[in-house]
Length: 209
Image 1 (cartoon, rainbow, N blue to C red):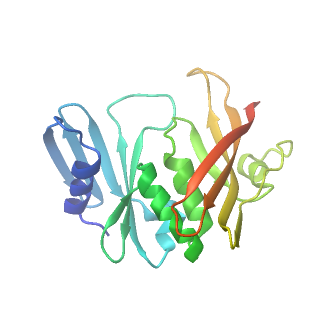
Image 2: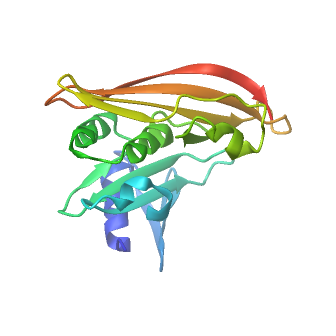
């Protein structure tokens, strides 16, 4: 498990801004709480929640959330992928995640990459998740009337790698409002010798749950 010292270093290198001062750090067996003069974070290892953690070249996944602001929905989160050979990937950084996408051509689990895109690019207070199977939306919400989605697919040829998948976002427009569901389709392309590129488009919006 990643040490608290390493978690603090990750936050200070990637998340704490210039001019933001550390006020207090609390250590627990499974992580830390970091208070600055502007924000408060809770951070710790969460490998079980991320498929990328099962890769042989991955050592751990650390997640930090900002919990000093009360919002409707999911708090802002910051992710760090620690590599088995040393080094780390800041999962909120599009350029770093684009470089990580090169590994799709070398056998990286496409679900793991899809989860990173949905979880961090961009941040949303909606609850979001990858839907890897065509009937996954119906199974996730136990609603037989929900539509099929485009299942997760990875194709590789001389032109590179193409990953397509779907995700959902569950949210409400007001604190006491009915939950709504949006569906998004993603396309990731990895040309030979280049980092990944991705685009997404919302295909269904505002399904009442």
